[in-house]
Image (cartoon, rainbow, N blue to C red):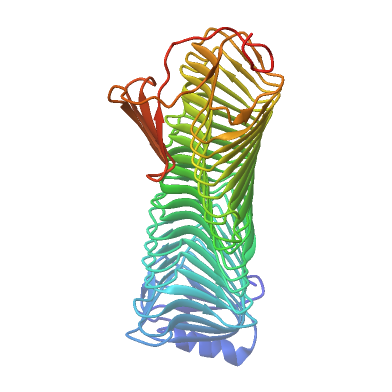
Length: 580
């Protein structure tokens, strides 16, 4: 434009061939109906600017040396092909800058809108904002195209930038600070946000709603009042390599939304790292650290697919809860939580593949009706304070090739729940490798328990067993202990080592093909024993005293166990369990 444009000079001091105000220069340019370049000397110009045609408005001094400040109304309205560079534009209660038609570019410009809109790009227009600052008001793209690069958005009274009504906007290398509502809101529109920094927003930093499309990459988000990134009302898009610190929720997906999230790090979120509520989403190679409540929370028919999740520190790891909620988790690593690592509750369904959990209280817990299920295929649970797996209510859990090592109870089922084990192993537990209590059902094939400091397998109350082809080795007290009205099958199993007894039974468990180098004893419910020590297992497990002469409550207050294990031994038995 510059080579062919007619030049007009503006200065408050006037002079030969110099306009004293910008409006008169624009009027002169309009009469010639050709491209114009308006060169503006430093000064204050309290006049609204109405620009038509192909025009450049350029400050000749340093950026900010030319101010157009009005008490109200629009400071700059354009229709054509307009470039403004180095200006300060301000007003109240209106669109400070309005692109009514054509294209507008602002460079090295500051716009202030204490009571309105900094820039309004109307339908069908295209606005480019480069190296500029926007204070107090919002930048609005309504059905318009937009490109924003290296800009600053400060203290917006509502959203700092909004794309609505089919707008298509890209935002790069910009900073958003202190917006009262959202940093960027996309509603029924499309936006790309890349390399930006967002801090101190009142609600979500980046928010997509009403079938919006939002792609976010290489951004940092800190200290926001709600979500760092939120998708609502059937919105889609992607979130790549975003780092979040100090949000209420790191990434939230709700109401039919379905984004792809990759390589994000979510740290110190006050509530949850990732929330999926009545939505979907694919999450790849993400990390959640020190979440205040839950690292990943799925509810209200949410159904995410998660690959490569890392959870470190905080309270609870993964929760899937509510009828119709489900989640598929592949390659999960969870460490150092104060609560439960993996949890399915109240109708939730969770599937885990290739899981490793270390140093948590309980590593997998389920509670709820028969629709509450969890599957683990390939898992290692180590250094659990209470239990590796705890199955309660009428829920169902299926474990395949899962190892539980160094903790109190390896695999436990209670109340009316069901637990299915295939090719699983418990090692170096202090209380029991596997336990069935209440009316729980335990089905195990090729279960291996080694090095328990007390019991290999415990069944009591009215629990039911189906244990096939399993091995119990070097359990310090008893390899398998069946008491009260517990019954079922113990088929093709082997008990060996140096414990006090191989099997102590109540006569209600069939034991064909039993192999044991230790004694097989019939258990007697003896009375007048010394006062017992206590073991409490009510979602958490606390042991006070040794296993001998102990009382165990598992699952909740409704399940009680009076357990007495002594060191009396009977002669060795044949393989079928009868005395030799």
